[in-house]
Image (tube, rainbow, N blue to C red):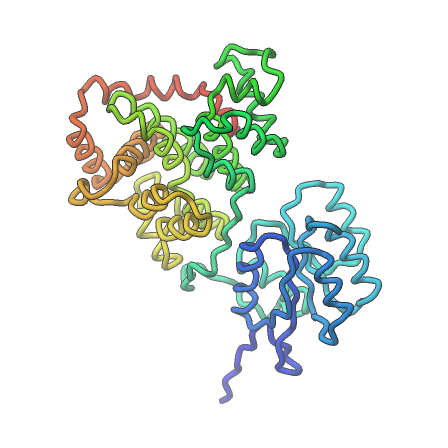
Length: 428
């Protein structure tokens, strides 16, 4: 009896030599991620380019032409569309896989008139890219269906979306430093028209009583305050990550829960005399569960099922994540925050978000308040919490000597009131 040897998708089964690939994307993280995915299937990476001119120069001057060109559409200088046209004309044997996050229907429609071999929308998983290339190479039937319950998923295999440029700039903006002030913040935000529109909409909302009276971004920043505007930018970024995830479970856990946690944490800091850390608490509450979003983006169907088991009290989420993927959302969040170069305080919150009662004195106030806010938010949303979370809640109450009236103020009435907050409108 003979044993059939599996040949990696990146290996030509006729010559047993690797298929060669050029990656063209102006995002360093995107290039690195795609390179790791392809190398895991034995593709040879001939070159990585961040702009059109570089790859066209390489093709014109190198005797080694790639089998496949993985191409983003939006590049500095010439666009991906221009590259496609030139490659089709001069190098017709190169297979083109377009990888882009565009939602512009006109752009996607224009691709149909060009010779491309496949299109893959960002964000994508390792399995999605390998499946797509298998089809491009005519080897789709050789790809085993992925069974997440039987495969160890390494952190390096996870697709991690890049943090939007405006968020990268704003997260490091010091709102306590008067130098530059609102004018500097306006310069950082104004190039992003979508976020500018949302900020203007909130400034003119009934919540702030300025309906139709705010006409410029500068006026909106003055009204809302720089810290609020900074939080709005991060809120918009969080929405951007989850917009492709649909269904009630994802909406409640990945969109509504983070906003509610952030707002509760923000409101907890004042009566506890911790007002100086409320911005860190808001951001930590908003982003601490980013690991869940990453797992959902990589395994959208399966992860929705696991979240449903968790919020109904059937299974412990960390446990079922490890059973299915051999990693959990805390490990994923820690990796994401490091790759995004987030502030150390937020990296610590991500890594320590499941701290146990015996570690209560070893974690920061940001950790404790954010954990409590998350528990209160889960209760408001009707999630079934394990006894361990209720024990943590009581422990945190003891640390801060919570008066009963403060505990009671974060119940159903608070939730009914906070749902009218304009931050919730941004998640709609």
